[in-house]
Image (tube, rainbow, N blue to C red):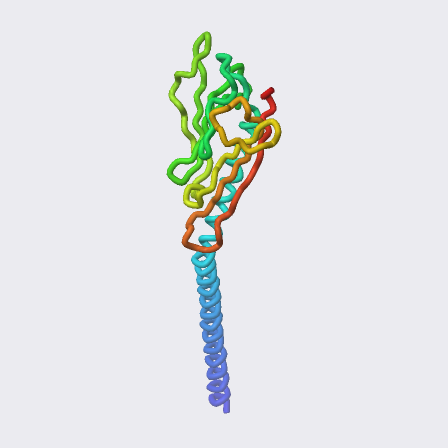
Length: 206
């Protein structure tokens, strides 16, 4: 009777130990499955939403660039050498003088579209009397710009009476600027392009 009882207890102990190993194996399998599902979901999200994420980043960058450009246009001023604030006007570029760094000198600036991007050109004056002969420093404000492809002007100009200027050589008539930038990282995919517009009244022109 004693031997039989001992055998029964030993068998029960082994059975209990076997159940623990099975439960651990099941737990590991469930954990691995959950981690795989999460990883797959994240990868799927980025694959299906990468365009939207990249487009949003491009739009945010363009907004910052346009805000800075419009702020600078508003501050168009007479040059350090006495030249008139406006240098030249075009539908895809604008050149003028403005103080962008609060130093004693006025910088020469050029905003323009080239190769599907919006750029700023900057020349600091030097010498006494000051002259604008230093090399132009170019910086990119926004990429993926589609104005040329969409046949849309970046700049529109208005005179003192609010009329759209057609003779862009008459720079003394300029009082108000409207800017439009179309952004789309891939025109062949949805969503459609995003259009950013802003305006600037030139405060220092009389």
